[in-house]
Length: 306
Image (tube, rainbow, N blue to C red):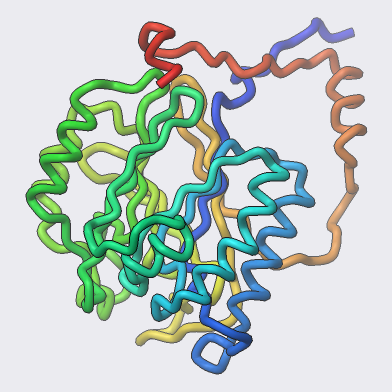
């Protein structure tokens, strides 16, 4: 009989569902007359709940509403907030180039409708999530103003117990589609200067409508695909399609962050289906165990309560 074995890694300290580019529209209209963005998001949320994954947070990285309509934001809240309550998950919203700052604040966050950049800091049991607004009102490219960079530097001056996740809409990486340079994040060098040497463990972004990964200033960047429609990267030009929608799961371990693309498309079962309870029985039969989350902060415990 094999000796008992402990898996190489424990359970993650934190789990995040990273969702992007919902592009909801008011009323019952289809997005661009071609895709039911409401239905696609509802499918994503249903699949997430059915999976029995219990994320600590749902992070939506921008382009929440396609044209910034108040009713679109109200609808988004009605779709997402009940699920978040059932999952006991925090919801974190990020501004995108299609969003309207004032409408988002008033109708989704229930705050005063100002047009100031929506830069925020959230804490999830010691994991810090910094939201950086890269939107430029009236434009589709991204920018980060000098005062935003100063604010970001101030936030990062003190490390967080479990490190920091930076959430933004425009990713600070190249795109494989030529036309995307017209709407990319401009003047990225100062951002890299602020981030180097900090406790930022991962950058989460959207905007591109396809899943991709890279590094920026030595930090992993994970771009979630869109929930509404995606880009066909095998087209020589640019073609959106009502297919290949996905979201990401982010698992934060003591020494690494794992980003996993979760396609929404279902398909027939291949091979043997193993139910959740059977998985645990098979592990027990194999005398293999997975340790619980370590949850050992990198700083003194008092910082984890902030």
